[in-house]
Amino acid sequence: MLIIKQFILAFISTLMFSAFFSAPKKSLPLAGLLGGLSWTLYLLISDYFGYSKVLAAFIATLVASILAEISAKKFKKPATIFVIPCLLPLVPGAGVYYTMSAFVNGEATAFAKFMETFSIAGAIAFGIMVSSVFSNSIKRKTY
Image (cartoon, rainbow, N blue to C red; front, side, top):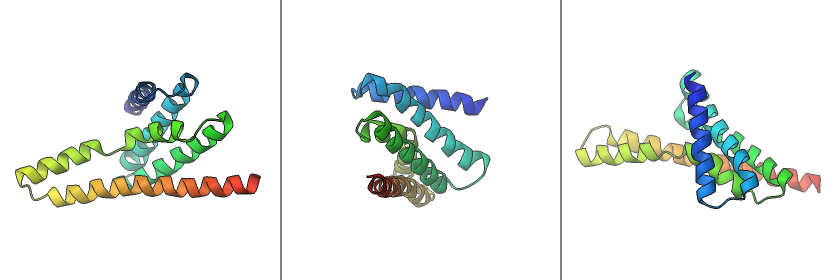
């Protein structure tokens, strides 16, 4: 039941983010769906299957970005309309907060939190890059 609740919250937050930044109205439900999917996939990989958060962020980013590229091609919209919102739930904002809090309070775990947050952000960037290369190679073969 928790996973369904998390999916719904990620869907709503992605939908509202897209609406706030004036994405086309027809693309809002799909952007929300991709955001909910990316967060659900991240949770399944990290919490239920027990893999690291970095690997979970990479796989969720890769899958969501590929689906966003496919959606952009199918609906003839720019890929950023789908890619940016669908990755919003994966951004390690809380990790940045806890890292800074640990540094300010002089906690011994500050550097470890920094490395985890930085690694998650790097995994997201790497996942976007890999999906973009994959998408470009598919586009070249189809034309």
